[in-house]
Length: 303
Length: 312
Image (cartoon, rainbow over all chains, first blue to last red; front, side, top):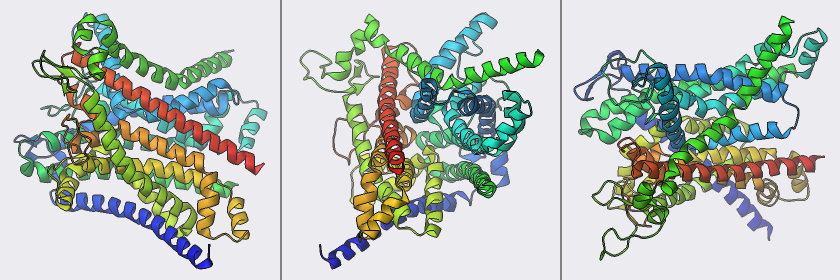
């Protein structure tokens, strides 16, 4: 090939891949811009703090915000200890390169790839129909308390879905703690757990926080797993017990967008709800990115 | 002595929670598969929705020509999965045709050509896209994109496979980009330096040296993107029109396997044939994405082996 052709190809290839990049970023900008443009005008303090009224065409989204917060709180309580323990096992307790460790790692990666709707089916089939029914039979003499869609089951389903996120972040944080810190702890006579508790975890707290925040952001945004496990279209009360249903931002968006009898009347509310949901997940993601880059910088400085 | 007991209790707790991911995965399979199995075991379910009804053409009444139809809530329920599979395949194909070139192109640009300041913009932007909840993408496709695409192409149906496929593609792009970019940056710098030193241009280096070296990772990116596209629910549910029709045309509405579960499980009678068929669809999705994920992981590992071998 002559020099000229090669040069042409070089420019063409760079331009094509660059255009692909630019197009993706442009699409992101269009989506965010559109939602901000239509979503901000209707936003107000009243909108955030009142319940919907007049068949969702008026009022606010407070119950949905409350339900989302309640859901991710329960989810966090379940997923963080388990995820952190799993990561500690993989990094500190497990024999290096054993078959079992390989299997656990593969399971975690695979869990991350299971479709969200399958988690929803699992929540219904396992938590509600199996665990919930058993609980009712044993503790409530067969009366229906836990064998129905409820916030606890939705939260546990979501916890399983976000488990890989927490494990991966925590593992990364544990991996960057220098080997010498562990050795010093052992040399001073610390047991394995004392070393983990007093040396590793304080240093890994940033990574654990990152994983938790990312999990919360994911949990706040996913709708498919809670469709049949506890989300409700409208509730006149706020959930206060674990076996009650709840309203949720993402589910609220889905229902209002697809099942509203009067789309034009709900459109401003819908856009503002989407904007609130998006702001929430972005703030969380942003916080996670900041913490992570802080950790990485500290790590680079330590080396 | 007390210290020793605490230590072993904690060790036991850590061991147990580490196995949770495996237990979770197995439980998912058992509890979805259990409900799906009624299709084979229960004679009542089998009569209405046996395997042959699900996969082969069937005539609802004598004299009516055989057809593939998904009409689970009519007088004579019809449970052919064929229209749903065609719908899923159609929308996934559009999504991949849209997402793969963009994501791979962006990954190549970011890792090979972009100066580092530009990379600092590209990567967070695509992470931002990954952070958009799928229900928001579905909402955008339903409210804004559908009308824009219909007007631009002059289509009969507002919600169709093109619209849903592009929205689905937006969810696939971050996955493909991240995995492919990781693979490309994992190629040792010495490969590029050697190629440039031999007189190759940046394009030739990227195309003939870096891409082949990173191939297993690129392939893994495509497979994982495919898995994501097949399983994604909310986007397709909101933007595809949800009509279970047999048509391979991308300009027609469609109903996907995952969206069918989401749309119908809420209203279905517990324990009815319809209920078990929906779980059967879930099992299919689970197995299929599981296999795709395994293949993806296998290729990522192969890439790691290959590059670590070349470094030694």
